[in-house]
Length: 226
Image 1 (cartoon, rainbow, N blue to C red):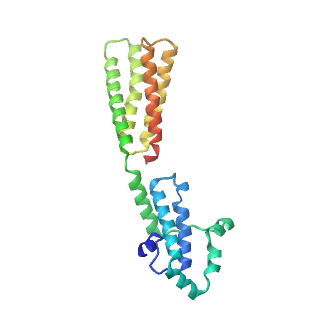
Image 2 (cartoon, rainbow, N blue to C red):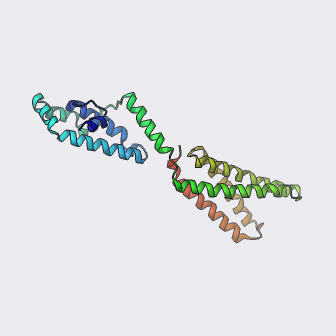
Image 3 (cartoon, one colour):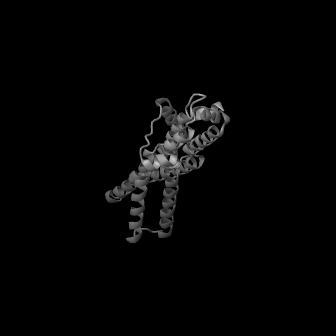
């Protein structure tokens, strides 16, 4: 029973009114709909619901309610439905509870899924090799204009490598650093297909599809970045 009081951030033996108010506050603060349906908030929200259900039905609360003789009136005053309808409900949580929620939330966010790590490693390998290849081409004795073209292709791949590395570390800044160069490269390669400057258009088309596929998968993992 004690851990249910702790879930609601209350001392054991708290009154019905205190339990009801704590339930109202935490339910709104931890509502998964307001927190991108993150797993941490879903679990905490379910704990709050279970704790309130148990405490509300316990004999301790019933005895307390019968002695006070005011349970029904209090319940009507602070019931979740009436609070929502009146619009007078105010959320206040103790500083200690806020810090605890922040710590747990950050700990959850900092866990990089294995699928995202694998994707980042593959992208770093591909982007790194292509960056090196284009960099070598710059100094391979081609004309100045050709060297500039290779340089234009080299820079986005370097940024893609850095972006993938940052996402491997669960850094949200790496997402844009990866996606923007990917979009630029897709446009450049697509334009090269339209102008007929590619000797192997099928290979370039497949390469564009692969980059688009990586971008879509990275987007699905965006919620794990912070």
